[in-house]
Image (cartoon, rainbow, N blue to C red; front, top):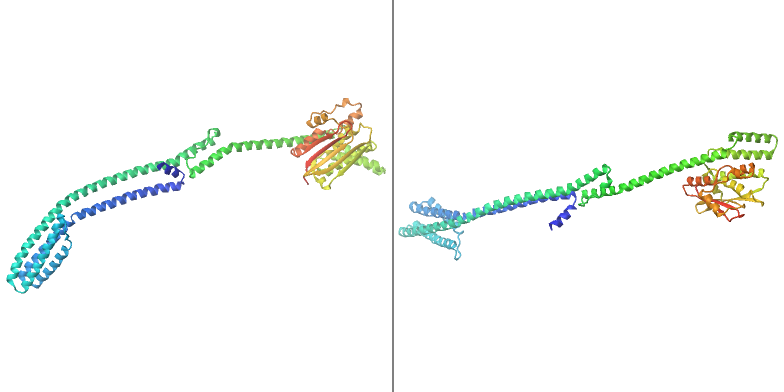
Amino acid sequence: MIRRFYSLFKDFRLSTKLSIVIVGTMLAILVVNVFMYFNINRITTQMDEIYAGNVRLNELEDSLDRLQNSVTNYLNTKSTDALAEYYSAQLTYEDQLEGLETDITDNKQKMMERNIYYMSKDYLELLTEIVEAKRGRNVEKYKDSFEDSEKIYGYIISYITSLNSYLFRGNTESYSMLSSSLRLLEVFSLGMLVIMAIFDIIVVLLVTGNITRPLHELSRAADKVSAGKLDEVGQVPVHSRDEVGTVTVAFNQMVSSIPDYLERLREGMEKEQLLKEKELMMESNLKDARLKILQAQINPHFLFNTMNAGSQLAMMEHADKTYEYIQNVASFFRYNISKTDEVTLAQEIELVDIYIYILNVRFSGDIHFTKTIENDDLLNVMLPSMIIQPIVENCVNYGIRSIEREGKIELSVYSVDDNVCISVADNGIGMSQEMIQSILSGEYVTPEPEQYTDSTDIEEKKGNGVGIRNVMERLRLYFDNDSSFEIISGGRDQGTEVVITIPFRDV
């Protein structure tokens, strides 16, 4: 029972625990004091009652003496005052007689009281006759009656004295017993107070230990956490479900979550570092792409300005076709040397149109280029610059330049779900699956210039230097791996299709 109460007590709130201890202690002290008060008051009352009988008999004897004296005084003086004194003493004595036992019993004390009562009744009747005889001047009668009354008076006094002595002896024994009981009660009360004091000390120690022990354990664990010794902390035991227990549970959860938090923080830092690396790589690739595009024997800006001057000269000479050609070449160079890292799909397709125009001027319209746009809204999607033109250039150099039939390139833009698909297909020589896998994995190496037959082929095959691998890498970095790059070919002379899928992000 005690163990069960203690287990329940541990789960109480701190305020409840302290209230139980304080109120319980006060109630215990109050109960002990009330117990002592009632018992001492009871014994004191009994001690007072012990000699009440003796006091009553003494008063009865005094009243009897007063009554006898008042009768004697009246007989001697026959005064009105003496008669009044007699009547007063008679009433007092009669009132005191009512407190005596008159029942028939075997108890010696009550038998003696009964004898005193009836002798006193005879005595009072005899006194009444004496007073009446005195008032009637019947001297002979009141003298005889007075002598009888003195005899009865003597008997009554003797009985009262005997009864008083008998009661005193019995009361003395009772008094001794009550005195012993009182001393025993004092010892018992003192013992109860000592026991209550010890009990209170034990309870206070248990309660304070129940409160402070978990706090000490929590403090030691917190010191280890502050010192960075998380592997030595472990779980702090939860001894109760009070406020300290609640704090301990929260502390354990906090300690348990710290490694996860540190791991998430480390992962976050790694992701942040990875993003920075991606940004650096993208910036490096873009710079590399620009450098390769602009790598030539003539300064690009000088060439651009020269083209503009040539177009102005052609316009003044009314050479419209020459003017248009030079203007398109200038636009192509202007796009290449711009510092824009991202462009719209419409700008990229416009660059492809310019590039095809220039090639057809050079090769007398041998390249047949068509484009299909499913929805003009798709042209607003953003993507890195120089993505489609290098693919078209590869279609020309490696697909349709070496075939005898009419070369065709088709550009298609369409949507699939929430993505934009850009398809560049040619009817060229195609490629094997091994080559496709080699290109996509980054293992394919473009043949060195000395492998080509002449210097024209060398320059033609080198193109602008922006390879498929560069395009794939920049798409991956720009769209954070949310894009795809596919190469599809049926084999020898079956043509090649490149499909780029990017998420639709309208400007």
